Length: 471
Figure 1: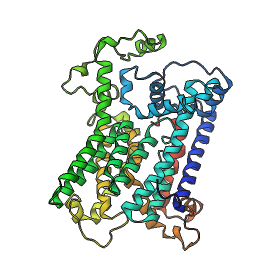
Figure 2 (figure 1 turned 60 degrees about the horizontal axis):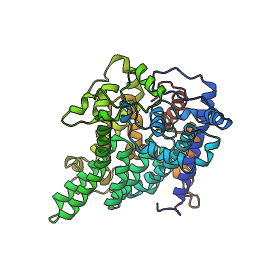
Figure 3 (figure 1 turned 45 degrees about the vertical axis):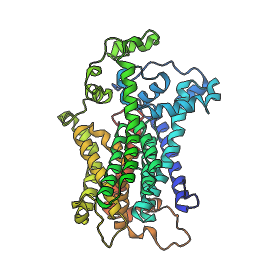
Figure 4 (figure 1 turned 90 degrees about the vertical axis):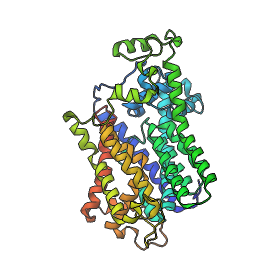
């Protein structure tokens, strides 16, 4: 990445690593102070720690393997044994397995594979979340044409409400890095590099498919505004194909693995076969799953519906009301960001950003380049609230939508214009730290926003690492 001599980049790297380090320390302390909850979550059998190194790794890193992290770690160690494991995409397991069996292999004498996978996920996510923050800053500089707003947005990303998910063995950090860096390349008109990075995002999480919308939008815009557009359109079609390819390949793998009974299950460890019998998990072999006979045999959509009850309005149940309260702040932020942008850009929004509209304020949150990111936020907010497990919406939006951080940065600058001061020789001083130090003098709106970020960071860490409901 460029910008290595930018003082803002140096401060983002320092602050991001500090935040990740603080999260790791908090998860250790909360694990020691709070007893683990016995949750009805995926919990495969594994041998107890056998060496001093494993005991130390278990003490320091066990909070990184909760909830969905158990699936990713299990896949990294055993592959896609159970049908419902295929809801979790392969990029993260592949990378942490490569780290555990590669650079960390010399530790095999003191750490089991499970411990090395935990360590590799911690190192990987610290690096990826830091690079994602830098990518968000670079993307903001190009899109907003405001280094300061982009800088504050990147700092907010470092201390976001999903900080715990950017640290544990989840795919959010990897996905955010691939998404933000890919979008930055697209903004710089590097279609091949951007599409390649966004294809990695699809290999990490299924919602990476939504990123194809950026190329579809720009392709329609090129078609409407240029008389000779065959070459640009072909580039965008190739980019869209690249983004869809990982999803298609993985679904093909799932079909080949679970729809052909010749694979059998005799070579599986006995304890994994017994777990499948006890929990009713489907393994490869007979009987063949029903989705194999569909016209479009997609394992992903079937598993999301069958195992997790994902579908339109299917999560609208009275007992899920606490989860809706949990997601309310980010949904409210998404609605506010969309409403404020559209109300300030009625002419641009009425044409779906497909025609250039001249206006004086061509930079900052209300700039014309921001429209497509507002559209992405609107779609994911609506889809997440109506069709998904609503408690997942927070990490879905904060790991996917750069405009959410730009909006929060804009709100803070609007309410606290003093944060930048007149410091000519201290251009990279950290405005996030200055805000926290001046907490009592902040406006109520700023306190609520920062309180949301910090509260979800700390409370989420405490709950998640002890198998309490924070997924």
